[in-house]
Image (tube, rainbow, N blue to C red; front, top):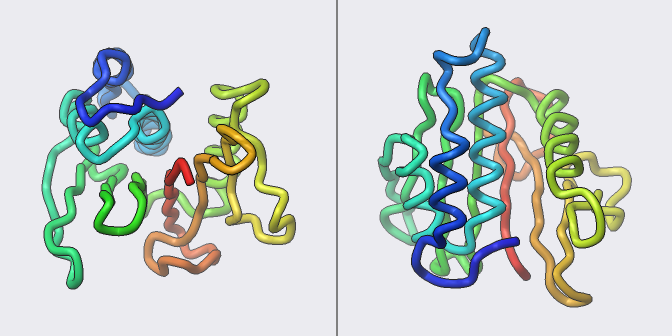
Amino acid sequence: MRGRGSQVSPCAALLAAALVGSPAVAQSYEEAVRANLALVLEICIQGSDALEWAAAFQTAGFIPSQRVHPEYGPVPIFLAPADTVVTEIHDERFGSGSCIAQTRHMGLNEAIPFVGAFVTQRYAGPGGFERDTHNPDNPCAGYLMPFSEHSAMWLSFDSADQPGACVEDGTARMTVSGPT
């Protein structure tokens, strides 16, 4: 379950250190994309805020950088090895915290089932991720992990090149946000 402090939880730090993957270990670039995407999702799901996510990504060997948002100023990003996945962290300036993973090496048609299998297997059982049934016709609606009747973590999908659009263009963006 997610930590609740503003410091890096020992669990998240150990998790990031234990799960550090490298494309050199993978047999192909596609496997490196999958391995790094799984690591990013694990860090995003286990972390609880921007500081914890940033520390976990640095511990995992991601390269820190930033982009400037026109309204909110500097936004931290973390680059996975070999340009496989880019992660952007949104803090409370954006409303609620979210951890956004994007790749230009896997489209939504592949990312949605890959991520779905990952979260439903890794977080199986009561209190784990379940398919969002509020929008059954929208494949990008994603998954939720309920904490209570009024609080949940959301995992949603869209295009990395067309944020907000559920279109297959060879890119994918996954947003972990919450709890709501």
